[in-house]
Length: 461
Image 1: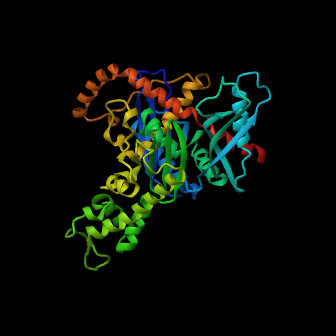
Image 2: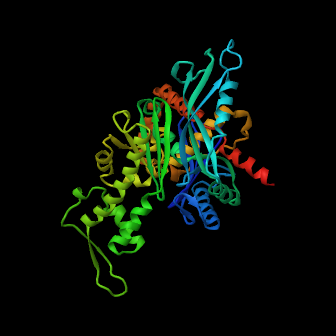
Image 3: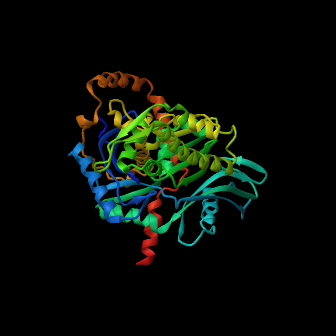
């Protein structure tokens, strides 16, 4: 047991669900899940907290369920995911002419270059969340990953700037703080999901992570180790449910149930003569619903979401054969039948489902490997990256907490877990490399997003 490691908690505040997962790394660098709770989310629309009181209730309920799974847990700090269609990104270019060309390029000059980007004009009410340097140039040399140590007159870079609405971000923070928790940091959901479902080779090959949530679809595009683009598309699983409800004249709960049980993203794959019988309302006769019609409604909305993905890929010149890793689908909406085929058809790229199990230790319950928990697992990984870089700032007084039986796989799967243990030790070098790659992944982004809002609040006091 590795009780030296801290327990880190990811809190995913989504449109349809709020999930809290507590995890700790074992000696192989894999996450052991020590607590897990979820609750239905009210008060969040399209990834934005609109009703703080309802959101607080839902967070409290998710935490209760997390404590119920493991009463020994103590949760005070959380890493929180942030999404919503107010999140936007833009590309900029920055250059500086160096004062002292005799010396090598230093970190201070790179910091200056990045700091200058925070002066970029953005609409009122928005705030720059992150400035991510992409390729650097030194004089006539292009595509330099890290220019420190080079000599030259002029150093510049292309930047990816992520912005968000100040009030929307503040609302998330308020809901968390009023739930009696401290926000250790806020993390962009597309980045958290990406960290959970891909490895270093995906970042190098070029990959688009499409996280289909309840209220939004998050997109993150990587190429040659660089984050090229992020976007939040304001449609998700909720929209499909509402389309079914309106199109077929059924209740929302019935629409959701039909989508999950009988839904398909390709109407060609649906049986033409299959029907679903739904009880009639207040003495009305039962309703017969065609599975083909259901698939037509789902396909229309899913195609629209994928058209947005294609549009964003075109914007950054990544729509052709540049993405060798293709599209990785994750999030709750990725579990729709035939979605891979529809994605490949609309985008022209290979597609697969991204599961967060690469980073999980053996012997956990299957529920946790569902794509719906990718963001939460990614948030814990971000916490660990912070811990590994700033160990001194983390409290070292960790209490030993065992994994509760409910969070372990059933005995049948346990034999696999034991076999997995030996397997783990033999591939521990590979695991450590994977852990390193996640570290490298996070090092590109701003360390503490939450500090931005703390500074903001201080100015208002």
